[in-house]
Length: 129
Image (cartoon, rainbow, N blue to C red; front, top):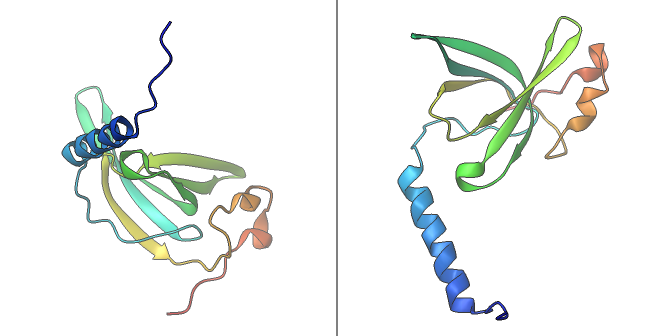
């Protein structure tokens, strides 16, 4: 059995190929800049049979992660007394638009501590502009 070649030039050419493929499949979106702690409304296209409708999901952004085509963001909202989280791909063709309702002032990139908090403790301070 031959040992695996550790050719650096091959590694870089593979990375270039991946970047070319990503450029081809990337959809240009004009979404506003948002980060964790912001309250946003995601207008998401849903197909049911042969009908299409747009559903709005409003909540707090818990995190943004990934790079390129694999970039995602997690939004959390309270539905009754139950917390609902949804992960959206940034480059999804089903996202119609994103509205920023409030910009939050948080000191972390991932605010998972919000899951444990309820009521007034779960509020996020708003950033002054």
